[in-house]
Image 1 (cartoon, one colour):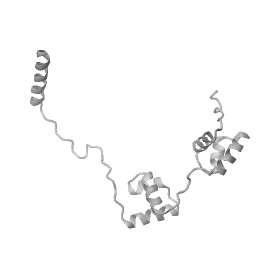
Image 2 (cartoon, rainbow, N blue to C red):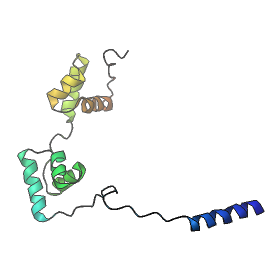
Image 3 (cartoon, rainbow, N blue to C red):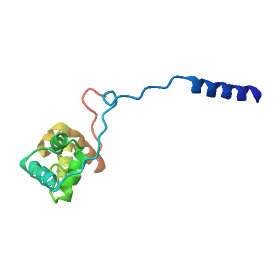
Image 4 (cartoon, rainbow, N blue to C red):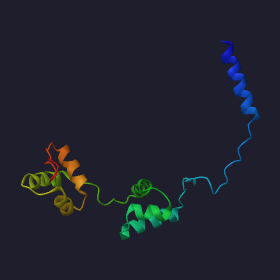
Length: 136
């Protein structure tokens, strides 16, 4: 028990005697991302820019916020968001086309979504996906 107590005492002594570190200057530190409070004008601008055709990611870059936050602001304004996945009718049609031999990429371009969105929707529907060419 005594050697442990001596080790702790030695450690405390070394810590007291060690030189203190200088604090990081602001330009060395990672820039902090503060939550931005939006004015009514900012919110109206975001809705207008989105309706003109900019994506949530583009708007987020301009206002220094995430695309998820932009989407939340738009929903709170009552704006209908674009490209929100597939309807049940589209998923059923995609399943038929996939079974007929169409690729996920082809289906994605048809419905204006990514191939991974198609794959996710088909899996939820219970469709067994084919292996990718060359991945057997």
